[in-house]
Length: 416
Image (cartoon, helix red, strand yellow):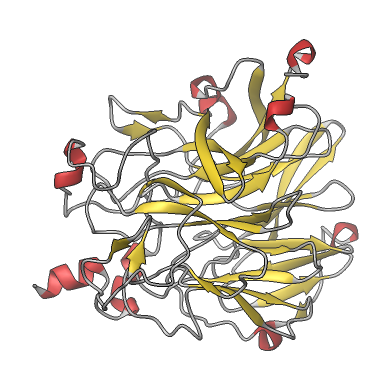
């Protein structure tokens, strides 16, 4: 195998793969599609010249946003919530109605407020290294960049001048490697802070004590525990409203073919904290890795609750507990698939629904239309969802620097 092929597949040190960090793999699964289905013409070939889609440094003008492209089930509609914030990704809501938004490559945190009936976005923080990880609790905004953990107290009263934060970096003691370490964080039902630590490569053997994990901490960064291992790159998780079990998306590896391996939707079953989810030896529903090998690679691995598609770029996930959407959406998970780069025929660029029964899930389409399959191009890249108190739901679009509000407007059908 040539040096260029080794580098492309992630078998050389992570530093030589910095060019790949701009995106996680993407693509979303059609019903019944198997990652090894050779009848799919994309499964047998892959263009070695594929490159990540760069995030635009400027937001799209409001009149150029692809709202007219978005397709939703009957009764739902999409409208513009806010725009003008390049790199829009993770979202958390403050107690006083401020929407805080993290970014990755652009290094900013935004605050979006409602003034006189008009939403205004301002740069709250900038110059950080991929501050995708945001959490809000007791009036404080927690910001997780790759090499910093900062807490801004009483932030909604200080949007014009946040002041000096409480620096919790040393307490959390997170690795500062860049590859797959842009964070997703959230407070769980137990009041603990849950933090992702991704693999520091596309595919390689990792230190299981450092990378490929989901961790939990006390809010101040003490008391670290590892609740999941063998996780390549989750940047989205949430807790089931009834069982309180943690469900998370996980991006599959790149450069193993157009057909996969699929992204995963996983759950941490109660009493199974610390379980192994397979990376780097075992992928999807038990596919051994073709490059990083060991005997019985899938032995002891917790299999996914559902597959999310080859190179789907699965990011945000939130369970819906509101009352606006029809009853059939109660306690379902909305899963965002940012869309593929490491696939000849593009895939994803949507929001799916995961209907959960026991420990398994059925994946169905919800928000589509941003991918033009015939032209093999896309109009937007959704990244995260955030249900609001009124029962509507926000969807961030990193490609266009916008947030869309999804609402349901047919009260007569709400009892379905």
